[in-house]
Image 1 (cartoon, helix red, strand yellow):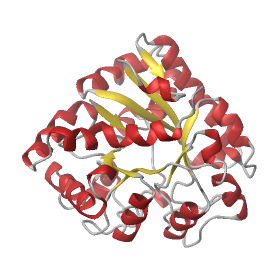
Image 2 (cartoon, rainbow, N blue to C red):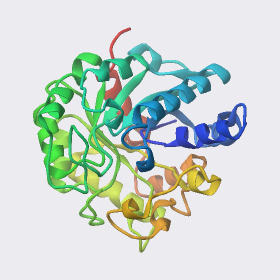
Image 3 (cartoon, rainbow, N blue to C red):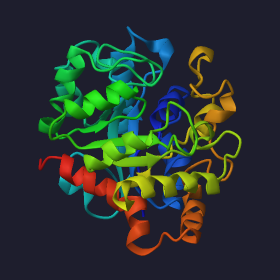
Image 4 (cartoon, rainbow, N blue to C red):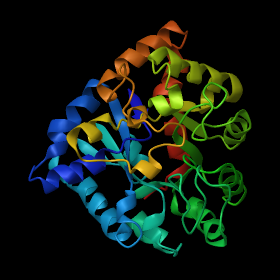
Amino acid sequence: MIVDAHNDLLIELLWREGEGEENPFAEHWRPKLDAGRVELQVCPIFIEAHYLPDAAPRMALKLAATFWRIIGANAGVRAVLSRRDLDGAGLKLMLSLEGVEPLGSDPELLDAFSRLGVRMVGLTWNRRNAFADGAGELGGLSILGRDLVSRFAELGIVLDLAHASEQTFAEALEHSPGAQVVVSHGCCRAVHDTPRNLSDDQLRALAERNGVLGMMALPLVVDPHAPTLERLVDHVDHAVEVMGIEHVGLGGDFIRQLFDSGAARIPARERTLASSSAEAHRGLDELPGPERYPDLVEVLGRRGYDGERLDAVLRGNFLRVLRAALLDE
């Protein structure tokens, strides 16, 4: 079974609902998650650039509503809100924020999104906002950002440092005492050099906080010149060597289907920090979606990951972080 820390499926599902589909999750995503043996999928609220800034709160609420429609319309699918929700059989979904633009400039709105079910929050998506600088910028946390991250632990929210600038990464660790920390989707800069990947120093800092890096399956971070499963597992091997097996997981970021459906687009000015090609965002041919996770498991097995070591990467490490972060509600 697999825990996947990042999949932007809500964008596609909201778009399909607008096209009149009654339960698009059941047709377009549930079979793929089941085929990949995904037991817990983190579902981010991501606000595309053309909705910023004024429409960000409205779009965030619409995406949250889509999440809760999935839960209501699909038997056996449960939302993860507390520690006890991690237990038991069946598919589990957890709501997250990828970028805090929906908060505007008010840290107290984090309470409202917590009430909506958000249990993981990423501060940025490459660009700057009122709280922090993303990977495309040079700065770090603002005063508002320091206030924001200081409240994660008390709310039972996981701090996600994917897309953070190097300074934001370091300052968020410093100013978030007690918070559980992950990088939901990224890879290793030593294997492929791009600002979206983590340096070895960042890997070590994440491990020191008992955090987990979710391995991302997009060519722009794996290797645009060799976008293969073997190359993805090179990142796994490097992360395990630097951090230890306890700190590596999966965060697929499967967005090929979003582009193929017409639900998503990448503005030219923000296509990528690593490549001008939209193809770099479309996923590995050998791992285009969660339904092909068994193929990744096979390659991991050939590299010597089996038993408890394999289970740690596939599910155990992220479950440990979530059990430590979530509250008993």
